[in-house]
Image 1 (tube, rainbow, N blue to C red):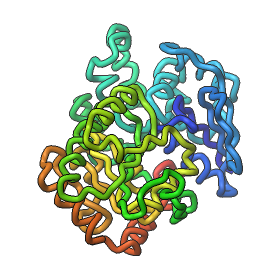
Image 2 (cartoon, rainbow, N blue to C red):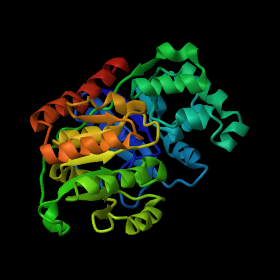
Image 3 (cartoon, helix red, strand yellow):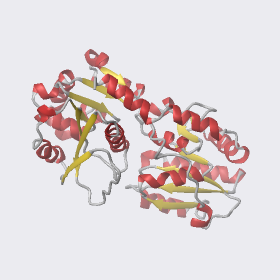
Image 4 (cartoon, rainbow, N blue to C red):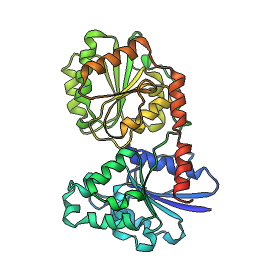
Length: 373
């Protein structure tokens, strides 16, 4: 039996791609008899994981020293017993760079999800810059078994920021996959749940509510759409530091009676929303490393519109599962919104087929092969 340790500061119920990735890999590999999976993560009082296929060890963490807290828990384990150690996010990478000896580093796999280039090599974190952390992390990358990037754009971005062309061949791209058992058509009546007029089309956004997720831009676009197609409701799922400011902007807009803020919900309930709306709409201004949320919507039969930036353009195939658009081309986006909502131009079966082709099983098999497990 192969023993795999996954270290991840972020983990469900926290929202975020890195945490979801860690959970899906742990649970997916754990279903297979040949794997014994252990996850070390930070403690979360709201965590209630059922029917999982891995063991979990958690510890309370504190800002600025979360990596040290994680190491205290990791250090209780006999790391010699593990065939592979997956360092899933920035906090886990710090555990590897600061504390793992060279022999253990050779078992480690570093995963690149998104902000690693800016934080580690872009001088975004002043403390890490002060202690020259980038040199320690570079040493880890050169010693470790391998490096996973979740998209071609993530790999490209990392090389651009770090200028580590010498390790480019050690980075293998393994795209995130979708759990088609967790995300599948599961329609509910959102009209009755939220007292929505029956003739309204439903537009959904699921994300952290931060300014750079493009909420102001989406509001502006939908206000313009209203002049041409007024019968829609915008449902927003999530929370974040921009939530209150954005609620105020919505109250002052022409859409004040057409936006529903659901708040944060459990990941296993998202399929009800994806399955029950006409369109998933997210125009993030971040250089997203991948865009798993679009595949989640597709797996429930929902077409998507996303910004043609970063890894998102690797997920959306125009005319197949949605449209990848220029964030600032409002006229074109409004035309796409109108066509999707008014004419139903997408075939649900085609969308589901595309999602199934990107299921997590394929990702798990590729990880097992690349990591020689």
